[in-house]
Image (cartoon, rainbow, N blue to C red; front, side, top):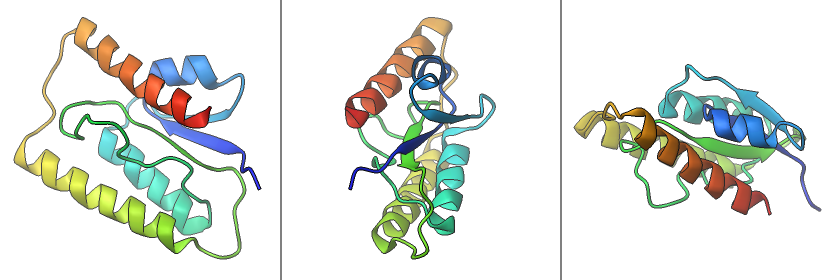
Length: 126
């Protein structure tokens, strides 16, 4: 069974590029950690992770952008694997952010991080 995704993101490029094809929950003011917590809330309600919250090689303390796909369908039974993955991802992000805060980047670097995050989610959905 192929599950239809909902994209949770703080990335304006992801929103602009995917909102005509998918449901996009967009919060431009959310931190990367805020996005992970929002995803956790969806998973606790019965949605399933469709992409890994920490996919890619960019660490949570290196980029401000995060896009994660969860199932649109809410299941009666909580998916324990999704719970485990999102909880571990939040812990890992908290550890990395605690040890080194996200840097302040110029506009060009932010565009690069935005493109990387978008490319990861786009390829994961395909």
